[in-house]
Structure formats: structure tokens, C-alpha cells
Image (cartoon, rainbow over all chains, first blue to last red; front, side, top):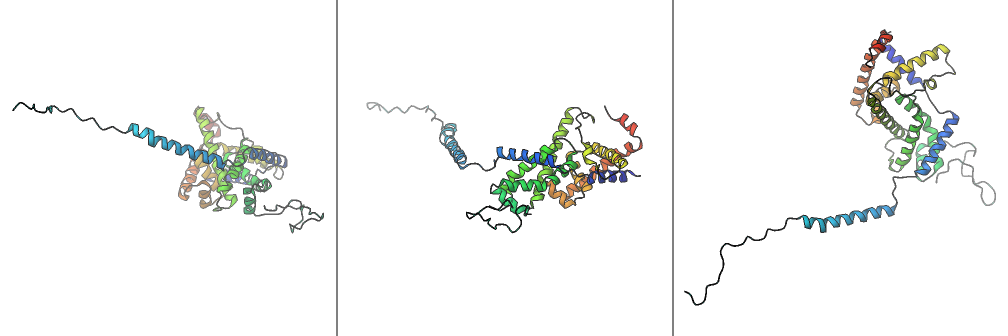
Length: 95
Length: 229
């Protein structure tokens, strides 16, 4: 018997195995599932209120960033360098 | 709301309304899609019917994929909870059974990954981290002879021990194709991988299994001694 044939035989054994629930374990599993679903009705569907709150919180955060954080972080224009030449107006009596 | 074959409601005059053609005590065989629509609308009985219809097949598939481990029933429950959550997003691209088995294959993969990590944590010893298997459940004790049962038990224990040494992806591809006889297209649909990928995984798995089976089938005692400690 080659290893190929042995492996095929082993695979057939596992393929033939069927493991349905017996009546007791099926009803127990069903009851457990019902209880689990009652705790977790449909978590994917968010209630409208929480979606509105999430949207408003997001909008508030965006406004905060746009009007408070960004202007502070923006580089300010450098002050003009002091002029070395003094612009003194000429005295009226001097040439 | 879909009528699921429960007791017919009594009208005000006391006569039962003829809502169903079939007898009230006999469960009506409804299409999966009808049950899905009813379950989406919040009908718990419809979802229970889906469970009763598909639970055995899901459990059997999980048994073949991960072995007869005690966590199977928890996984079956998780699969149906995941189906319940996904009903709203279900677009009928595949039928419910395929969709359900896709969830089951993903659950099996996650379980095998977790088991592999757990085993890696205990330094890859084949005996450490091995899960307890209920092989008795896999053997048909009612119809087969005692000798056949003993041989089947030994074969199953041997194959499950070999499968435990494969990576989860290879194991799933091999079980779907070689054990369950799925076509490459079916296996690809269930795993979400390309057909060529599934084919390669199944081939590699077969090669690995044959390589491990060859020395074990010649001298099983020696093979045990040569195992790295």
C-alpha cells in the first residue's frame, strides 16, 4: 500500500464522518443561540440618535481644528528688519 | 410578516383563518430566502428554522476542518450569530447556505490560527497544546463492525494529528478539496482566495502530509523517537 493510497483512505474516513447534533444537544444549542441573540439583537444597526451625536461631535472637532488649532499653528510673518539708516529730517536752518 | 406554518390564528367568529394550505401541525418547508426575509424583519422563529436546517451541516464541516474539538459548538453558535448580524448586509449574491459556510470556514480559520499561536507559545511540541479530541463521535458505531470501528478510530486519530501540523490555510484548502471533494471553484468561493491559490495550498498540503506519512507508515516507533523534543 503506497502512502498515496493511505492518505486517500484517511481522507475518506474523515469525509465519511458526519457529526450532526443529537436532539438534546440541538435543543440546548438552539436555546443558547436564542439567549445570545436576545443579548445581541442587531449591533450593526446603530440607532439614529447615536449617529446624529457622532456627526455633531465630528463637525465640532473639525471646526475646532479649522478655526483654533490651524490659525495658531500657521507661521506668522516675520517683523520688518530695523533699518540701519536713520531717516532724520534735515534741520530747517542748515544747508 | 411571513407566515411560518404555526398554528392558524382564530378569527373573531372562532373559525380558523385559512392562511396556510398545508396542515397547521406540519412545518411548512419554506425557501431559505423567505426565511431570511422574515428573520430580517425580526422574526426569531424564522431564524430558528434557519438554524435547525443548517446547523448539522455547519457542525459537520467544522468538525472536518478543525477536528472534533470541544469548542465546535461554540463556533457553530458564533457562526449563526455572525449570520444574524450580517443579514442586513446580505445581498443574495450567493445563497444562504454558501454564505453561512463561508462564515464557518472563516471561523475555522480563526480558530486554527489561535490554536497555532497557542501551540507556538509552548515551543512547538506536538504533544503540548494538542486539543482534546472526541474521535468516538466521528466513528459510526451503529452500523459498522467492531474491527472497522477500531480501524476508523486509528485512521482518524492519525489524520487529525497530521492535519494539526499543517498551516491553517493549507489545512483548510486540503480538507475542502481532498476530504470534502469540493471543486476548486467551490473551495475558492468558501475561502475567498483565488482558485490557483487554493490549488497550490492543497497540493503543498498533500506533499507535506505524504512526506510525514511515509516514515511514519514504515516505522512508527522510530518516528516517535525522532520527533524533536
